[in-house]
Length: 231
Length: 231
DNA sequence: CACGTTCCTTGACCTGGCGCAACGACGCGG
DNA sequence: CCGCGTCGTTGCGCCAGGTCAAGGAACGTG
Figure: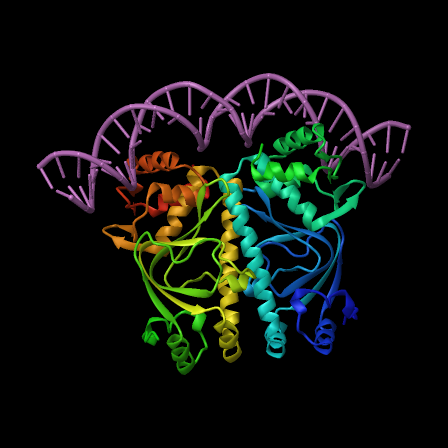
């Protein structure tokens, strides 16, 4: 159905210890989809019928609170699985993954999971480890939100972005997809106003370089110090 | 080694679709340990050598921030697995589980996991689902911390406690283990002062009934309304 | 290139809830 | 049953950061 080259995904931890033949077979059963920037892969609350893998691009998983507030629960980077409702024991998707940049998404029908696992027990083990890491990251974020002031949280968020989505840019690291102040606010639990003020401050001190939907980290060390709490 | 009666754990989702014989064998390989209230099962940062199951009692998983602040990452209820570092791909424990009440804990050496899984593939599937649920809960908490005011967060926390650890008490529900204001503060990311004020307020309105290390929910509906944001 | 839209910045003001402090109450150990 | 340690309550001042407001800069589109 798809005809994706195995080499694109061979190195992913999810497929570790899976034979080339099995992997090819799995890829043959996948659907590829191009998602333009700004579009959702699926919608929060929608019945879950598939699970997904991000091949290329960048997704932000949004959740809307009953009273209309929006937050970004996590970012999906290439190689990550998402929309894995099966694992969450739900039959609907808990969030909405929106493409921050044009993205390429692989998906398999939910019903295939059992069968795939049957043939390849490692798949579950690997999937579980990936979820374990996400759980850990979630706990770190909870701890940050509970104990740290806004500026530190933003520093952490920016560092994480640089880590996961950084691209060398001159003497710094540029976040490799369009990101707004609003996005950062929704990732750290603040308002875009506060984020704007903080970034302006950092820019004045030469830590970062801002711009419309753009962010370049110039002095990673300084941010790390901030994040650690050393004023 | 242990001689635990199968019936104690037979109903747990973790062991679903495991044969009685296999379960008995697994239980034979387990170590039982009684943990008095206030004592830790293991310590954050310690090398991970086992994984655990809470049989009876109640644990609070604490994390200490580099600068000494403490928070409660989650509560462990009977039937929950914890200290599952294998799944997190870590070799040390990320938190410290402290007994809130006298507890009974089962543990298996980490090294046994692979072997157990070999014989019983469902174990991984079930473990993953349990982690999936925890991940979801973590996301909910992140959303709460990002968007909700303190009083609402406390309302949510108390409702969750009533749900998971509630015991009928007269016309209300009593939290079935000793819990301090400090604990609730560390679960919601506030100070004990604010929690105390909030609970006093609720008590005045007849929603709850406080006391030393004690908390009884009298009007669950009122709390639910608060949690939902209805003034 | 004019116009609308989206994104960013900055100022002024206001308030939730934190920090500090003092005190009261319960319960345990001697 | 007395003293001390833990736990809870409450008042007060202060400030980080949210809200409200206004305007400017970059981008896309007809």
